[in-house]
Length: 418
Image (tube, helix red, strand yellow):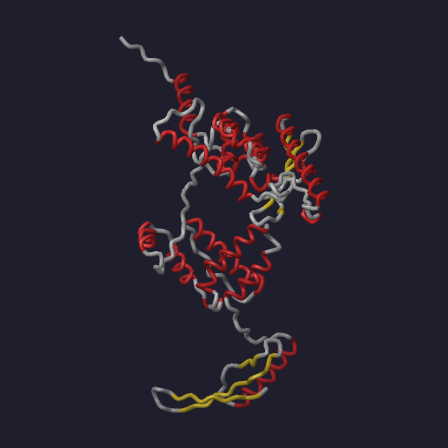
C-alpha cells in the first residue's frame, strides 16, 4: 500500500504536472488496485484510507485478467457434458475444436465483438463460386460451410458467451445479440411405398443378412436407428410388448432417448414377435456355446436384444451401412442386366436411393396415406403430432391430386355442352 506519482507533460504548453495515486493490494485477484489521480498527496492519502476500509469490507475488488476464449470454452464443454446426451456433447466438442478454436481460441473473450462474429459467419457462408474454386484447388484458404453447419457454429458460440456472462461473469454482455442464422432450405426425404418396402425385405440376400430382424423392426415400427440398436433383452415381453427405453449412439455408448415421448411401449404383431424371439434364442445359444468353449470372455456378455456376428452391440452406423450395401446390391444387379441388354427377371426392379433414417419417414407417410390418425402415428413414433406431420409425413403430389380431384368432383358443377 503506497502513494505513487506520475508526471504528465502537456503537448500544448510543455508544462509538467504531477499526479498522486493511492495504490492498495488485493489478495483476491493478486493484483494492485489504483485510484484515480489527485493533484495533492494528502487527497491521495485520504483515498488510500478509504480504499483500505472498502477492501476489508469486501466492497473493493481489483480487475481480474480476462480469460481467453479457449479457456472459457473448455470450462463450458466440461459443464455441458452433464447436460447433453453423449453423442450430442461429442458433436459440440468436435465442432468447437474444429471450427472455433483455431479462429477465436487465443483471443481474450472480452475483446471479441459482434463485428468479429458477423465477419466470421460471412466468411464461412457457402457459395457455389467458393465450392468451384476449392474443387480446383483444395489447398485454398477458403471456408465454405453449409447453412446447417454455420448455424451450429453460431449456436455453440451463443452457449459459450452466455456461459461466460451468466455463469463465470467475466463479460458484462454477449456479442451474439443480433447475430442472425443462415436460412436453411427444406430437407428432401426419400420414402418408399409399402410395395417397395416388401420388395426390399423379400430379397434373398436381405433375408439372409444378420441384420434382417433389425431392419424389419425399423420398417414395422418407425423407430429411430439408435432406439433399435439400444433395445435390451428385457425390453421384449411375452405379451408381445416391445418397450423403447434407451438408445445406442454411434460411439457405442448407451444413452437416454430424445424426449419423454420417446420412452414408449409398442404392441407388435405375432409375426414380428416370433422373428425377434428367434433372433434372441440364437443369441443366447451362441452366448452359451461361446462361454462354454472359452471363445467368449464373460466380460463380453451384454444385455442387447440385437447383436452382431461376434455378439457385440450393433451401432447405428453399422446398421445404416449394411442397409445401404444391400440396397446398392439390388440396384447394381438391375443396372448390370440393363447395360448387358438382358431381360430383367419378373418382379425385380430398382429402388429409390434412401437413407436408413428415412424408414421412419416412410412409416409416417404410408400410415397417413392409409388414413390412420395423426395422433396415433405420433404416439407410436414418440413425437408430437406437429413434429410428425411437419417433419415425417411426406404425402407428395399424387396424394394431393387425388384429394383435389375427389373434392373437385363433388363441388364443381358439371357443364352441359350443347
